[in-house]
Image (cartoon, rainbow, N blue to C red):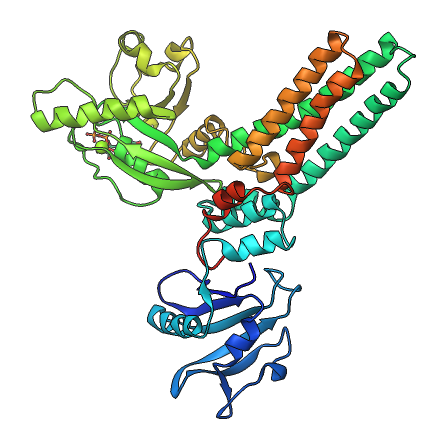
Length: 456
Ligand SMILES: Nc1nc2c(ncn2[C@@H]2O[C@H](COP(=O)(O)OP(=O)(O)OP(=O)(O)O)[C@@H](O)[C@H]2O)c(=O)[nH]1
Ligand SMILES: [Mg+2]
């Protein structure tokens, strides 16, 4: 890691600003040879750290751009090394040209995540923070972003250090016992120790389960609108989207194929799918559409079954025919503004795990309550405070710790001597070390930083 690397650090494509970064021992010398001010090259001594310098980036006689230049002297930089930043105007061809000039001057193209990798190796970041930065950049929803932000500010690191100190005091306590092995543990102190191990274990487990719930919300939920033709699926779709996406008409069988769009529920993106109305038909295309509706229905995370309450219907019979579709679903009783006297909400009372929402797509009545129901089903309390996001690697370590603690408890119950079960606690401790990445193996680092973009 003694060479000097360079890369474009801003997103590809044009933009107001495009940043090229150079990091390593030669960063300043190499960079300054391109900086011109008042028609002469700036010398490295003229460039104070952390000062924005307005100058011209010039390759030989060719003036490339008017730029802003920043120098961060190591170790006070992102990477912990000497780091230079060129703020160009964000034209990709221009940036490429500047970068090529830097390469010719001796910089090497940075690999994916190499800037952050150096930051980690120079102890500017621990692994969980580095991973959080990766997540911060790639987050696709406000919810995911908030969770990444918490981790950038050390949520997982803090939890890990807390866990570590609890395990260390547990270990110290057990070691003390080896020294005084003549005095057997009393029943009370044995139970007390078990209790403490249980506490640490459930701490770990609760983080894992919070992360599982967060993970579910990050993976986009599919909400499918399903039902007979003309029940108002497309009308509801448009209302929830707030725009005319699906064609609506009084002709049954209007929607022929499914249509899907993303909406945000409290910052959580969900996919809304409008399907073709389901009925017996001889129409070949409509049939294909209906097959797709069924497929979407099966694949849905949340099912909204629409029914038309302006129709004269024997609802008890209706439920008999479609019980398997209605159970587990949100029954959306639409057109409540023109309800028929035959409408009987109570007929749905004995369905398992289903709920009736009366709405009107025409007036908007009942739609907010329906949205609340959807949010509840999505498990979307929507506040990132209630969740922690673990990367797969971190999760794996926490699971191993839980297993070690379970083994410790088992050994303790079996009456094993402290020398034996202390080994399990040691094992848990070494796993903790890996969460923050102080036990670095090339392979793990390679995996983590390869997910980063070049220039990060
Ligand atoms: N009065 C009233 N009419 C509605 C309401 N919702 C929908 N409609 C009307 O019902 C008809 C059918 O609506 P769509 O949204 O096209 O129904 P759909 O379920 O998508 O129908 P298909 O695509 O054929 O399966 C249209 O004429 C709508 O204007 C409502 O709440 N009240
Ligand atoms: Mg439709």
